[in-house]
Image (cartoon, rainbow, N blue to C red; front, side, top):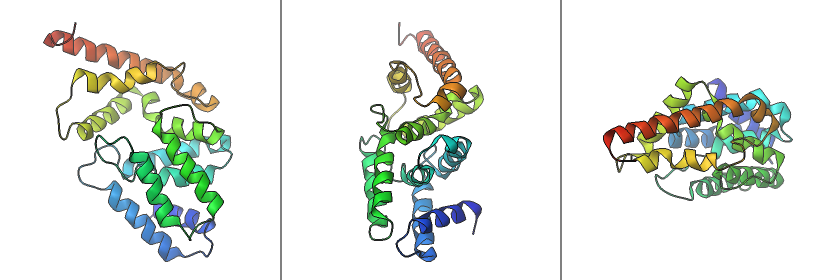
Length: 217
């Protein structure tokens, strides 16, 4: 049993009505199978490992770091390319496997936090803002790490159709429309400047690439 598996099992059992380590192990294995689907290149188990590590860096700023952690484990487990309801499907999967097993108030908090990773609007809670920021940590990493994650996202998105200028720039432009990329004080202090730089730099590079091809003005 590896360290991350133990971490999940301990967390699950901490909020279980009747702790059952075998059930927790089975739930963990189900998550591993989802995140290891062979067509995935970004929303993989590596993303979960990274996101848990980023949570560990800032968990003292959370009101309920355990709920954030459980939400991280489940937030991308159901991922259908092009679907607009992946977070809702992931939430429903969590509610399904945890029903009758975990404390209901904890389940409710986790379900809400999973939906905060939709990134459609500013979350209404401190923990919601923190998990949303954690999920977007890649934008604020060193350029090489940010760009590596971008390439992995593109591999997933372009399985069924080739990348276009619009597909490469849409989400970055969406983030640029915000007053800030991140919401929490921790991320504003530690990642905001780097994220702004990466996005501006990358948009310039993509625009130049397509201008040279004569496909954008």
